[in-house]
Length: 128
Image (tube, rainbow, N blue to C red; front, side):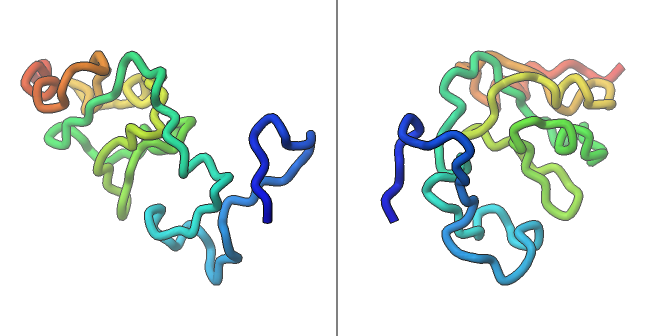
């Protein structure tokens, strides 16, 4: 099978998500174990233009899953209904996760891309 570039695809072309047909529902397979096709955006780093990034503070998270539900890029990593981090390869830095976070202070805050996550956690506001 010859893979086409983005500018060679015909309108209405189908891009398959996986290289092979799955024996069970993809939701039952951890994302890192799925056989992604070369044409799937999961295989492409798309966070280059992000200026701000969400940083996650596990100590404040109540695992409400709002960030996971509302993230338009599926960049919130959740296992067994517990938030475990952010997929920075696919996060665009939109900040929706921070907006929907109900904790006080929020368990996700936006920081400049250049700020190290440990440095960001040290700057976290105190609980009111």
